[in-house]
Image 1 (spheres, rainbow, N blue to C red):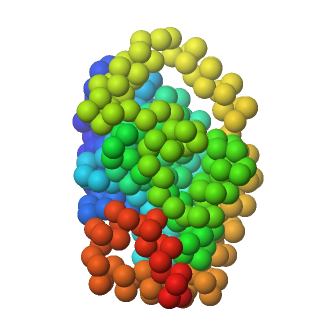
Image 2 (image 1 turned 90 degrees about the horizontal axis):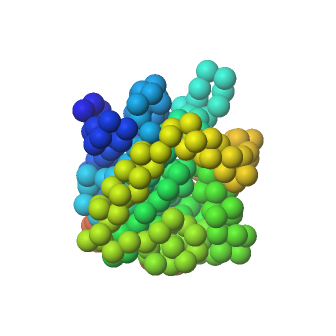
Length: 277
C-alpha cells in the first residue's frame, strides 16, 4: 500500500489496485490534488502487473467534487515543461493509461471532479447516493477540464447543452439514461458489482484489453487540441465580471447556510445566486 496525503493505493489482487481519494470535508479538487493524482497515475502506469484500477472516495457524500475556487490561480499556473496545462496532462494520461480505470461513485461529482471522472474508462454510480453536475455556467465561467468536450460525445449535443447550460444536479438514474455514467447500481450492490467487473477484466490477457481500449480511444476521445482550447477559455472566463460578481454571493450563501448544505444541493443554490448577482 502506498500513501499520499489525499490518495491511498491498495493492492486488491495481483492485477488490481484501489485508489481512494480523501480530502475532507467535501473532496474539492485543487492544484495539490492534481499534482498528487498525476503521481499516482504515473506510479500505477510503471507497474507492469497493474491491469485494473478502481477509484473511490473516503469522504462520505462526495466522490471527486468541484475545483477549489481558492486554488484556481494555482491550477492555472500548473504547466508541464512543454507548456501543456497540467490538468490537460492529467486527463490525457488517465485516458491513455496502460490499465483500465473504474470509478466507483458514491456522492457528489461536480465540475472539475466530474471532468476527472469523465476521463476514467468506466463509471459505475450508486443509484441512491451519486449526483453529477457541471456548475460553471451558473457561476459565470465555462468548463475547462474537458467537461464540454467529453459530455458532448457521451450525451449528444442537446443533452450536453442542457446539462452544462442549466448547471443542475443530475441523479444517477438520469445520468445513466443520458450516458453520463456506464451504469447505475443499487448502493448496496455497488461494491460487489465493481469488484466483479474489475476481477473479470483483470483475468483477461492484458495485451488484448489495452489493445481494445486503444481502438475505442481512437474513435471516441476529444483531440488534445480541443482540451487545450477549453482550458484556455476557462482561464479567460475566471476574469469575467459575471464570475467576479457571483463568487461573493456563493461565499455569502455558504456563511449563512453552511458548507454542507450548499455542497449537497449545489445545483439548486448555484441557480439561486444568479437572482442576487
